[in-house]
Amino acid sequence: MKPFYLLLAALFGFGTTSAQPIRFAFVTDTHVGAPATAAEDLQRTVNDINAQTDLDFAVFTGDVTDFGSDEEFAVAKRILDGLNKKWYIFPGNHDTKWSENGCNSFRRFFGAERFAFTVGNYRFIGCGSGPNMRMSPGLVAREDVLWLRSEVEKLKGSNQPVIFMNHYPLDESLENWYLLIDELKKTNIQAAFCGHGHANRELNFEGIPGTMGRSNLRAKDEFGGYNIVTMQNDTMTFAERTPGFSTKAVWRTIVLKNHHFDPKEAAKFPRPSYQLNTQYANIKPVWAKQDSSDIGAGIVESDGFCMYPNTSGQIVALGTADGSLRWRFATGGKIYSTPAVRKNRVVVASTDGTIYCLDKRNGNLLWKQETGKPIVASPVIDRNTVFIGSSEGKFRALSLADGSVKWTFTGVKGFVESVAVFDKRKVYFGSWGSSLYALNKKTGDSVWRWTNGKIRNFSPAACVPVLVKNRLFIQTPDRTVTAIATETGREIWKTSQHKGFESMGVSADQSLIYVKCMQDSVWAIPTNSADGRGAWFVNCRFGYEISPGPLTERDGLVYVPTDEGELYTIDRENRRLLWAHKLSNAMLNRVWPLKNRRVLVTTMDGKIALLAE
Image 1 (cartoon, rainbow, N blue to C red):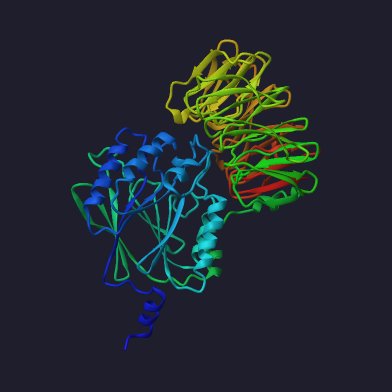
Image 2: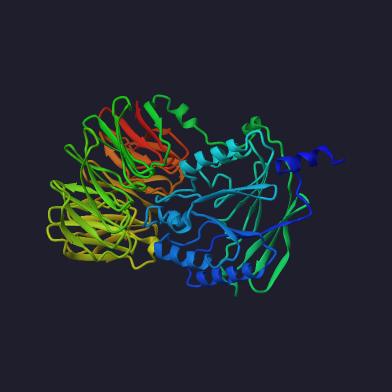
């Protein structure tokens, strides 16, 4: 008679692994699009996987492309379609951060952005991680967190062993790592995989055996590589494979077992600290809400209405006083566009390729203008004209009255992500083509184009430009602030002294620009400076910082959003930190200060709040 545990295994489809192995290819960080050999490396790996008859399937754990473009996705999909085995895939940060399609094309090309399937006794669960569109540490989208919870709920009462995969390690490099770990520990989680680090590494995620896989890229070697994973007799092994040649010796072995994690043990491990809120206890939310989606753009306020977009494709209007829902408007794509408001008109763009104008009072559609590609840029309104860039190499001027096109500039290199600024005669904007443009505001004709001459990753694209009189200021990801003459496009000065990334702002009187440094401090630089030297700085002690949220000043307070959900507020007159408040552990978007020292705040993981002293 069979032992009882084997009868259970036969009945419920789980238990110890049998002598029949499960073998699969673990491929990560293929980065199709850069370097030039990436597609060749992937094709060689696909050919090698096809030649092995004893592989059951293949997984691709993020950073499939280098810049998330449709062209790169098309190349990767064509190569992967040549596989003669089942394969499963999800995105990484490179697929979603620099996304001309607003994080929509991955699903369109590959059918899904996550997976859950069973092979043998094991349940394999995997989802990608951003940041989506905005530079910040890794973050699993709110939608994916909720999806994981639903997958865990399906396993409730089951002892089925689980293998989890994500692009990032399940540690503090991922802003919401603890949410995933806490869910996974409710299951019989036995191992976790990741990419991102481009190297084979043994890891441990709060007792969950973790493994990072090498990049498929060849780097300085002649050939790239991936890992062959074998699961047999309650053991999982990893061996690096050089495509077309040989499999190296096993470098990682995991004993597959039920760890019987106790949820109470979570207190032993690091979790985000909200000690700031105790230190500055006078700052509290007047109200706070949690959206079911990410929020990847700023909130705006007008006449008692505050409006924000979410990645479910909605514009949501709340009552400013109490956060009560006023209306929702649904689009056909994700939204990473901060709305613009003039009187009773709200203009916003969606990644469904459409620019919408809504009635602020009720959310009714007034007009829409369709374009050829997803839009991730934000509109700006100058009296009766809406200016906005898009992802098909165009920048438009539309009538605020009816959405009709006044003019279209078709010479944009790369896609537009940020918001334009304008003066009496010109409109200015940057793109992910290493370029900054000045166009005639009435005709759309090019006046000048500036470039820093660097690779696209260092483009003046995410920073919101600052325009003061005849000077335009930008901060680029090469840690450089540049002052440009608006008449000619000539550089007046540039400096890398402050080591900022993409976040800056301007004082209310326009005498200073504020530069958020990548470590702790905010610098104030006179807008009439001859060389870009700072006049003063405040050490806020926010640590390492890379988010692009602009700095904003109102009533003598400078608001500094950060990538770990903390808002720092500087007293400009006294040049000191006044208070700080932590709302989340995810990036803050552009905030909206109100009178009486109140401020509206949203976070990438879907929190909305009105803070007040």
